[in-house]
Length: 59
Image (cartoon, rainbow, N blue to C red; front, side):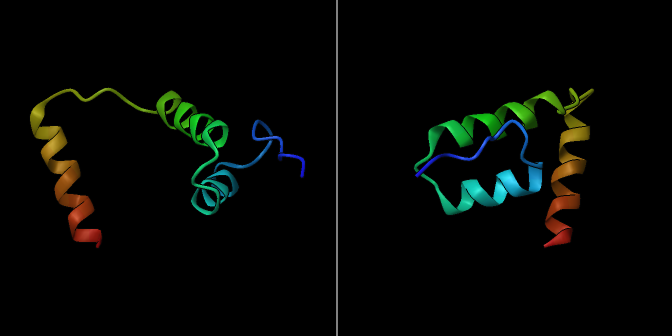
């Protein structure tokens, strides 16, 4: 079986692939790199607390 080209996969498809192939480290690291590349640094502890509250309310 040949592996998909993770570099050209959409983030959503890559995330789904990682969920279905949890032992595929290459796919996991590609997804992790993409998430880290789009991360914005926090300006304060209060900002982190607000993000956590919003996420909890979404669930």
